[in-house]
Image (cartoon, rainbow, N blue to C red; front, side, top):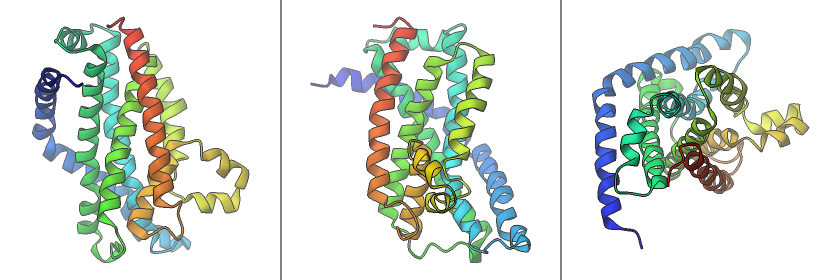
Length: 262
């Protein structure tokens, strides 16, 4: 049975960590405005001159939701990774608290997921505000959208914790970003759908199904636009849940070993 004392400690830790999100809200909003204006604005106003459909901007906007969550969480991951590989000041303090070490790491993943969720939730209203007539939300299922966005942020958070458990220094962070995070994100459907990839390169498309990022973008677009041109929502949701369980388990085991925690 879950110890209620553990719950209170985790709640206090989350409250402490989330204070930074509240203080940084306006800065995060400016970051989202910048990202959406540049990435989506180019697709809406420039690429049509090269024959790209006018609806491509709204397509990319939904992919930007997962992208913003990924960038925010991975940025915070680098701060966490730097702490556990150098002075270990913050993590050592938390490991002295009266809770099992694995719950310390779970709290950190919860914090990352909440931080990512807050930022990524800003993308859709900001995009609609900036490009009102170009963004059609008539078919969106808000229940599916919010549900899968929560799951995506939890997955990215545990993935970030897992990466942090493998990083040994700043040079290692750069290599992981260039060799792991960027390829997974760029091949994860930010600028294309899985079915479009399947039409052009079917063998590579089936290989890309091993990439959890493709289920994140496809699931979001299925929730917003309907499932006709995307991987069905519940397939994406279930696969993401399996990835979350597996990666989360590996992250907790690796961090426990790395920090020699009990």
